[in-house]
Amino acid sequence: MKRNYELNRLWIALLVAVFLLPLSVSAMEMDDCLGCHGYADEVGEELFIDADKFTPTVHAEMGCVTCHESVTDEHPYDGEAVSSADCLDCHEELGNQYIATAHAENAVCSDCHNPHQVYGIEAVSGPEMNKQCSQCHEDADVMASHAEWLPQASLHIAKLPCITCHTSAESYEIILNITQKQEKEEGLTGYRFSSYADLKKYSGEKEVQRVIDIDADNHISLAELRTFNRNPAYSDLHLSGTMVPNEVSHDLSTLDNRYDCTFCHASGPGSMQTSFLSFPTEGGTYRRMTVDEGAMLDTLYGTPNFYMTGSTRSAALNIIGLIIICAGFIMPIGHGTLRFLTRKNRQH
Amino acid sequence: MAEEHQDQIYLQPIPVRIWHWLNAFGIVTLTVSGAQIRFPDYITWLGSYKSAIYLHNTAGFVVAISFSLWFFYYTFVARTMANLYVPKVDDFKSGILKQVKFYFLTYFLGWENPHHPTPDSKFNPMQKSVYLAIMFVMMPLVSLSGIFLTNVDPLRGLIVMVGGLKLLAGLHFLLACCLIAFIPTHVYLATLGRTPTDHIKTMWTGWEDEEEGHKKEPEGSTPTVSS
Ligand code: HEM
Image (cartoon, rainbow over all chains, first blue to last red; front, side):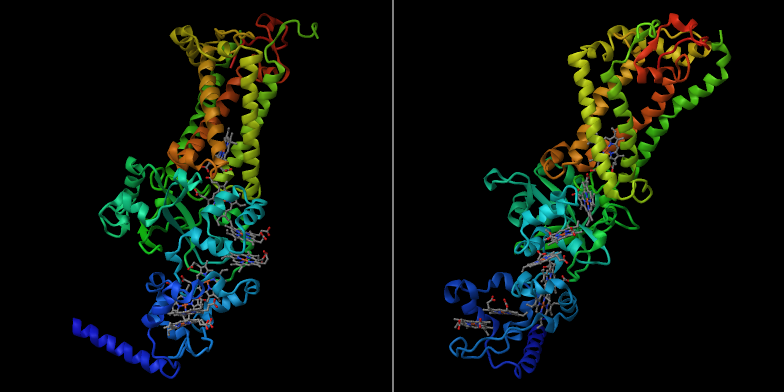
């Protein structure tokens, strides 16, 4: 095993060397670069790269020099500017899609993305995605402009990432996050997303996902959801739902069909069937776990605090409601028939 | 006026009539818009979903406010709330049974209604218990749950405490169904007067014919029945 691993590394190193040698004039490795850039007191806040955040990302697999080709062995003493790769070199599809929008005039890739902390959509929570936008679009302004046409705008903005309405997607899925009451010291009332440390208090020795995933099979069943929602020990926690695109696109714009509430508030085929539970990880990102189909439509205990009128109605309640309404016609029909048959009795 | 209403009693004062018809039209509006809100894929009578929501919320507040007016009028102005709406011990002991017997048996035999409405005792014991359930339990609960549903974000903490948004919406829906079920029954019973439109006219004009007055009625052979 071990020898195999070593051999693999050798191959990779060789490959990298073959590819990069002609491009780069530096023999420095990632660790060398981070030896300076990993410490803010060494290079200053501006040039600081958070190694803990960078290392787990897919970009780290490529090494620094892949993107900073022009860096030399004499760096930083050569006084030369270091080149940085263009995102479009590698992200052609998304990149071109974005460049084609009017918004490309307003923001470039690195306004929203830190190249040294890139995450896939599944690893980012809704509020964090929205932080990317709120750098330029102030929350209060967005709330005010959306409240002009969107009832309960604060609820919608809190529950939907901006990209759900401002980018297109083939389909959407429901992501559930564990939220908890805010402490008094935090100044605000209401709920916030639970962090890894928060959940660790509940799960103790076990992994945080065991708070819900009792049998540790990396899948949340309806029974597990109900158990979690009814457990009095978790009364300060609740699951908050959000609707996100199943795939990222970057055609950032105002999509007219989002004016139409039934884009979300109506049940199409299979809508509301796919959902995931998103758990915080130690590194501050998120990890998704699949949830049984139809959890959103469970009458009461599947997701007691996620209810989108029109699309998450319960079929069981519909039937009960129908029976109640039908009962209202028993009197007119039953009594009315007898009344008609006995009408002679009342003609004194 | 006095001449005209000689054989009549003034049963439904103006505030009650205003409340009644506001409430009636309100609830029909709420039913139609509520149906579109719950079943937007089948029901699109009101055009866009948004207009259904706005209409429902507006009608909801009209009904909630008219409910408060009704409550205020009976409790503080007419001061007949307890008298009219709360069943007495006797009502439970024999009154309800007597009334049920009338509606489901002796009515068909052509007997008279054992209850004679007066301004101080408008409702028969059966009406009292039904109206009590509707006006003191269902209406307040449906309005309250509706008000919660229009303020989900600000009231989230309370909603979670109550047991969740789904429970609240489910409760709102089932209570709404109960109120909807009440409509056909209510309208039907209202036609059991001397003539089918008798009681309905009373709710519009306020005046109800006296029992003895039925000789004056052109077709006045049917006995009075109060719904
Ligand atoms: C009194 C008769 C009422 C009826 C028959 C009625 C009926 C309904 C129905 C069928 C729904 C859809 C339920 C669902 O999606 O599960 C609904 C939703 C709703 N109702 Fe009512 N309702 C009534 C009163 C009220 C009142 C008094 C209010 C408060 C203002 C209200 C506010 C709401 C709200 C806010 C919703 C959720 C959709 C929305 O936010 O507009 N309703 N109602």
